[in-house]
Length: 84
Image (cartoon, rainbow, N blue to C red; front, side, top):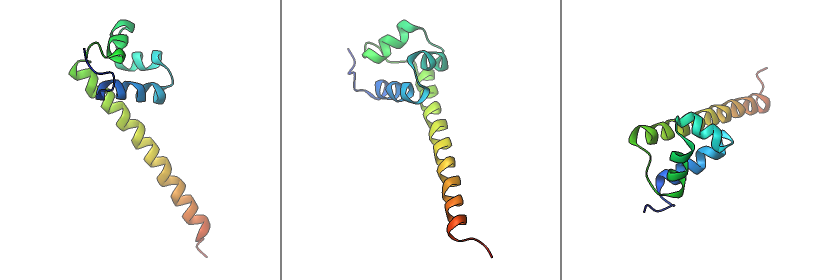
């Protein structure tokens, strides 16, 4: 049996938080409920292509977060240092 604290299970937990539900996560990963349950309980590991998809989804989320922060910093800088 795999450890429930493995990388895959942590990524799945993160994706559920990012996507808002287990259903949305299953849809994004194109997996069945039983596959998802096996992965989150640590019974089996997701296949490599699903693992890559999980990483891609996290990267996309992080990229959007970073872009939002960059835009906020630019607005703050513009407000603090207006051009005359």
